[in-house]
Length: 360
Ligand code: SAH
Image 1 (cartoon, rainbow, N blue to C red):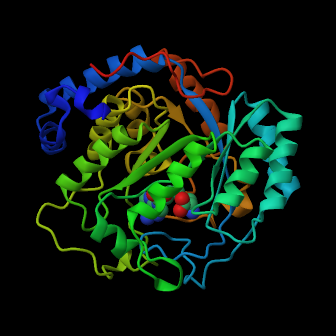
Image 2: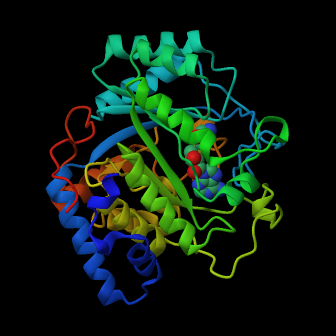
């Protein structure tokens, strides 16, 4: 296993001690090691991925998520192909190299319809297409790959079995396991997708030890993309209301900006070549400053949101998200910040780097 080549300082106990570290001077060491690794393995470019939230319809009941099926008060939408293509044009004209089509787990997004849309995007632009549509069948994933989709994002959310079962019920309340999502990640790999996964940070019931396991699993899965972000309580969800049979633990991880930065840095060390976004959830808890700091602590990707105004507010997976990373003005201020940081926007599709040396 690749893990055996890891030096001792990146084993479970050292990850754990970094996660628990509160001394700012000592943490500077972690930031510097991660930033140096980032520069060496993926360079200075920041890849911009245009996020289009194509539907907020969802058949699942994840206890943490604001667009879960049981929420009857939330207006549901599914964008039309022409609305999505207009957003794709906007991504292209802003110079982004990738569009990310994200949604709830929406059976109304059919295999044929989406395959046609992917083909249209590929015909009219040179953009990479990333999908993030939840747990879909092998046949659907194969059809979309054939149509030209390049990448797929599916977070395993937590590697802790009992926590996963508590927060992520299967269809019709059936039990579910992290292995369900891990099996799909293996299928995606087999189909030739670039594979992305990740976790929530600070979900109720998440211990420091289980978060350290998550980082080790990123390495074991040899992920091409890793998205990590703080859990943000949504008042209209069971977890946001303090409900749900989550395990009671003494060492609860906080869903803070600082904890997210620690996980970003450790993720860079676990997966040196991966594309790692400074996520919208990080921008929500830490504002622009927290997100930009993340780019100096391991991250190399930003995902500006292109969802049209009339839908964006309804893709409310957590509160406060709407304002975080969208709009023309925010786009221009991002470019100005990147310029000041000496981190140019990436050119082209920005696939996973394969220039890195093995972890040493
Ligand atoms: N339906 C797709 C996309 C979900 S949204 C899927 O399940 O993969 C993308 C990510 O948002 C999820 O993977 C989850 O990690 C994150 N998310 C959901 N609810 C959240 C919350 N309350 N706080 C922070 N992140 C959340």
